[in-house]
Image (tube, rainbow, N blue to C red):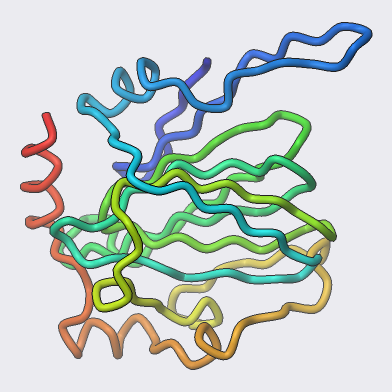
Length: 199
């Protein structure tokens, strides 16, 4: 499995080796050793989630308060999505910046997002199936959102996605500035301290 550190610390792309023959193909979509090697600490899977999305569906920007936060290992099993990682850690040198990775059923990449990072994707195909392995079970009191349409964040949704479709919850999510003013974003220092505790 090949690894690539994204420009935002705590975000890592994994590309598996695919073994194909006349029956189809086989690949490992998750294995702990490459993840530990890339992160410098373990990744404990506490819950596995799956979403199925029509073309144009936007899910996010979602994040969880730290500690404990919620790290994610995301891959697209069927179809294609453009996956965004957004640095929401107040005090981070990269605060407010984002990077995107195409996840699809061709290259079959996966994206790891550390605690404190925001996550969002837009489905580029009908029936896109996305799998999330996460480090903590769902906690509605600690899982929050930022508007994916916030112009200050400036996520760029490709024309390939078509008309965007958001949930009422994501449409009502606050801007990054409003969430910061309300003290509802994770602290960079707390995220680093929590990451050190995992080593």
